[in-house]
Image 1 (cartoon, rainbow, N blue to C red):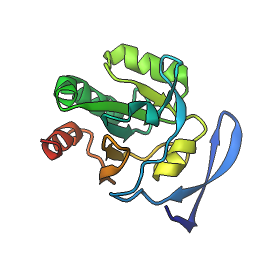
Image 2 (image 1 turned 180 degrees about the vertical axis):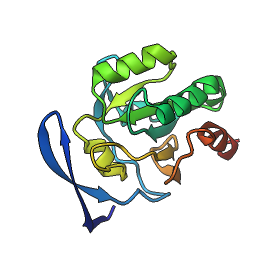
Image 3 (image 1 turned 45 degrees about the vertical axis):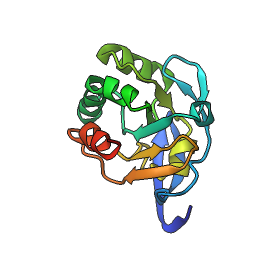
Length: 167
């Protein structure tokens, strides 16, 4: 993964000012970096826990905002098709557990929402952007290799596009 030294952003979260360099997205064919974060239910989960399954890792900017809600509902409504194709859907944002929990419960999302509240996963995957994750996604195969990367996700069509890709 390369990091552009020219893209440095300043943001404030929880009253703390931080600097963030926005890394490039990972390339198709690269090994997806492992990580450990909490789910919206407060349980620790690692990407490697899903080895043997395909994973759709979709980054979204902020829980319970219009675009994120639209995308989450589209993935929810087609969730069984993902399951039938052996794909585990994992949403991830910089929100804290309580915010993602409320979001998941409000819209009855059947998949985990991951809480990257220290931006560590977003930095590894190229989603860092002024305190909010960029709307990007990765499809990761059973061995942890990235097979598809979407740099600009359309919340209205993302679920359809990924399902068409994994037919």
